[in-house]
Image (cartoon, rainbow, N blue to C red):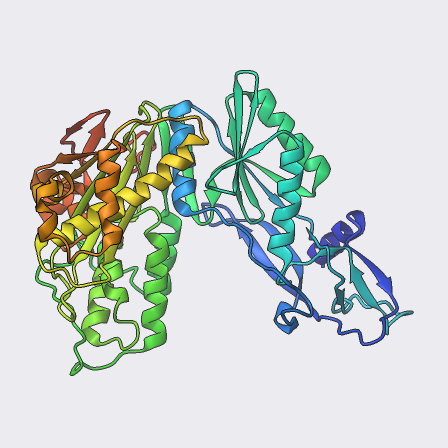
Length: 507
C-alpha cells in the first residue's frame, strides 16, 4: 500500500493526469498495478516498488498511436563505454526515471484499481504524460529526454543515437541511455554532479550512485579497472533449472559432440528447452566462452530432442564450474582497435553451411564478438574465411564511427586472419576465382585499398576467434580463453585471479 501511494503521489507532483468527464466515443484504456522487488547484486531486496501501467494491448495503430520506435543502446555500445571509462579513469554513475513518460497524444485511461474516486466513479483520467505500458511511451520519453539534453549543450552521437556528449573546457561528460536507465560519467566530478542535479530537478529521477548493477550485469569499478560479470544471474538460472547440484564440466561442449536434427530421438518439453536457451543467450553478454555452444543448441528449438537437451545441460554444468567468469577492462589499456576472424568450413551437419567467428578488442578489452552460421554454403575454406573477415570488417566500421564520437581517431585497424582470406583481399589476380562470392563481401577489398584495415596473418594457435567457431579440447579452450592482448603485441597469459578476487575472461 505504501508503494502504491508513493506512485500516485509521484503522479500528482508531476501532473500526469486530470480527472475529467469522458468525451463522446471515448475508449478509455484499462490500468493495472504491477508489483516488484528491486534487488541489489547480492540478491537482497533494496526497494519495494509498485507501478501503475496502462494495458497497452488494447490500443490500435492509427487510432491510439502512430509511431512507437525508440532507439535503444546495443550491448556492444555499453561495453565500449565501460572499456573507455576504465581506460580514462572515469567513475560511471547510474540513475533511472521514477515518473511517468511524456505523452503528446490524447489518451484516456480508467481510474486505477482500488483507488477509484467515490464521487466520480464514471470519470476517466486524461493523460498529460504517458504511462508505462502504452505503445508510444518509450518513444515519447526518448523524444523528451533528447530535447532536454540537446538544449543543455549535449551533442548526440552520429551513429549511436542513445549516446550524448558534453564538452566543457577540457572536460567531457558522457551519457548513455537505455530506455529509462541512464549511465553517465566524465572527467570532472563537478560536471557529473551538476548534470545529476539538473536531471533531478527536471525529472523524477532515482540517483543510484556508482554503477554496480545494470541490465543484469554486475559491474565492479576500481582503480585498476572494471570487472563485468553475471555471477548472480548464473546462480539464479542454475537454481531455476535444477542444475545447482550438477557435476561441473571444464568445457561447455565436447569435441565429440555432433548435433543434428536427431529425428529418431525422443522429443523433450519445447517450452523448457526454449527457456534454457533464452536464459543462456542473455548470459553471453559477459560470457563469450559459451557463445558458440549456445548458438549451436539454439538451432534446434523448433523440435528439441534428448540429445539437444543433454548438450544444453553440459553448458549449465560448465557454468557450475565457472560461475564468476567475466570480462576485465583494464585502466592501463591504451585505446587501439584489433580484431580476430575465423571460420569453420561446412561445420553444420544439416546444411553444410560454415560458421563465422569474430571478436573485436578496444585496447586489451574485449567489447564485441559473434558466432554465426553463414547465410550461404561456401565452396571452400578460403571462401568461408573471406566471408567471416568481411563481417568482422563491417563491425569495425560501426565501432570506428561510434568511437569517433568519443574523440578517438584510428588509422589502419589490425584484423588478424588466416593466409588464404588475406590473399583474396590483397591480390586482384585472384578475382577470377572469386566471382561466385556474393558481391557484398567484396567491400573488404575496397576498405583494404583505402587503408581502413590492415589484414595480418595470425598462427592457428593464436587465433582467438577459433573459440567462436567449434568445440575445442580442454587445453586449447583454456589457452585461448586466457590470452592477453597487450598494446600491439599478443602474448600468452594464464587465467588468474584479479583485483576483486574473481576470474576474468580474455584478460
